[in-house]
Length: 383
Image (cartoon, rainbow, N blue to C red; front, side):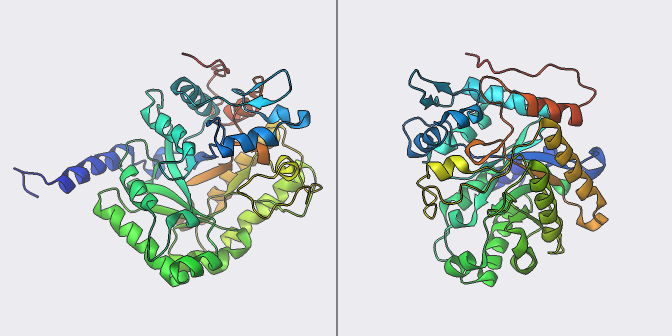
């Protein structure tokens, strides 16, 4: 590269480098870890199989209080979910910022999937403010060693975006989830092959000027010791933490969750603790969804946990911050992850529910932004 003429790659590097410099946040600038929430965007594509499935799972009247605030219910008692719009996305952004979230971790799908539309509208929003984003990508979506998924290339390009969440050193935060030894063996020739694939991903990101990704491998906590260091991850986490063969109140779930953080710490890596906003899959047990092939109708209906009170939820967030702070200096993760912004039919959500229950957002606001007396943004979608 010369001062007279820039190649296309050189231009991309300059753009990405500017994004790194603009959004790198030195550790001293923050009193706590970043707080993010998973977005699983099944709720915004009427007519698609996935939106039809969640409408069906939340049709029973006992589950309809879980419907997100933008849903409607017809005279026959059937829920309906509208297509995502820019005003709706802008309102959800306002809700997330009010609660004190720093980022959303969008569950990744191919560009052709209707579940990617919310990400498109997030990126086009003029109301994002300080809210950032990153991707939570299932290992199965990465393709194979012989044929890596186009999703990898798409994410490398996205990392240059100004709104991508970065951690200390300007490193782009990236979640690689549902990692198992079996999947690594079937698709990448084993853990060594997956480690090589992750190393190539890092090299490609650096070459593009996006920086060295801070890769959080999300696994079942009990497998953390054997997996994380072998694949070259920077930190350990989990998409969700629960016990699929247990039941109880939310305090019981919280104890299981926090024991899971300790199991993840056994990897010797920093832990991005997962906060559970609930775990109650009964809607999917009574009306199995097409992507859960092993779920049999009614099987496991007795296993669920009561949802949290708003205070129980905010208390668990505070304990997650404390968990990070208590780790040795070299093992303090830069982030906490909430399950979830909108896993409503599985029982974990922050998004306001019908008609406009904002209590969870308000509890987080009191905890994270105690000096801010602002009113919650409400649920009226603008035009």
